[in-house]
Length: 420
Image 1 (spheres, rainbow, N blue to C red):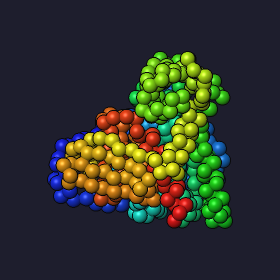
Image 2 (spheres, rainbow, N blue to C red):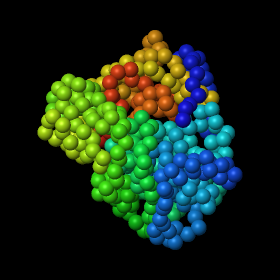
Image 3 (cartoon, rainbow, N blue to C red):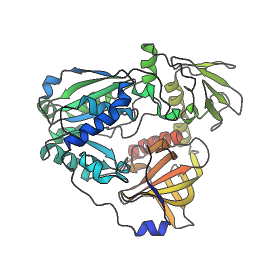
Image 4 (cartoon, helix red, strand yellow):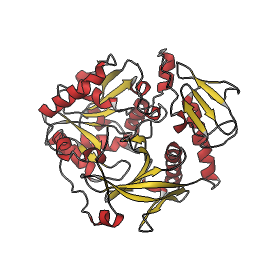
């Protein structure tokens, strides 16, 4: 999937009018059917099936539907399991580029990832109450990098109580394993299933404390798909299964060097010290010429988070990389405005570029995470920051910095909000 791009100077982009807010439309049943057919072919290859649990409690709806986010296949799943009802999707605003009318006709509700959007709650309420459509949202906002659940917004229960609608959960199994974000969009031969269940009725939301609602939702999003793969003996024998693994396992636990690991074929190797691991068909890592430090990939990723946390605590965390810069200002195109440098330290982000005309600063307490993606729209790996007036997409020219930046942004947010 690609996105429409256009080269403009930064001055020209600044002069463009910002996106105008629009209320969500009623979903077109015809377009939803077309989308289901278009996406269904890919889903059929997976032997897809699903089960419903306790759904009689949800009634006829409309529902607020929560779904964990693992890969683009999630959309195919959603259109299949929700085919009998109208529903809107909370989507990222870049999905509208070049096709705004079509996407809005599907009832989609655009928002900017990890940017405060005061209109989003009212738009969701409008879709539920006025359009009488269910609303599907991915509260994690970003894809899982390592197959575990990602952070959720704080006090999510307040939002659920405010809407006063049944809350339904869709949990996928196999979606991440078939198409993990780091693996260069290469599909594996994996069966996909999902479970749909009612979490709360409106009456239960009304009488349940916010803290308890948060606990229940957090539990639903506590996932580990590498463990799921091992427990269910899901064999991945594709010869490219370790391609791009360096994107998440960027730091060598043997020599402590960053940015020198290379995932290729079935192995992950550190080019600095030569430490090599093989990724077996059940997703485990086994040392080839070294003692295995981490056999479970999420454990390695968690260790990298600990390393980042220590750097933040002692004030040594730093990222400073050259990057190409794109700006999302409206739905006509993604504007390629030039190059610059992305700087990230304990004080937050600073993006400078476009011959000195661009300088954007974002302190740590602005967002609980950061938009980060691999091979985004087949352009490249990105870190995105910004505001409702415009988003800056930074394509780093060197190093595997995407996962590292997300981990650091999350840990810096925790520190900043603890002090607040």
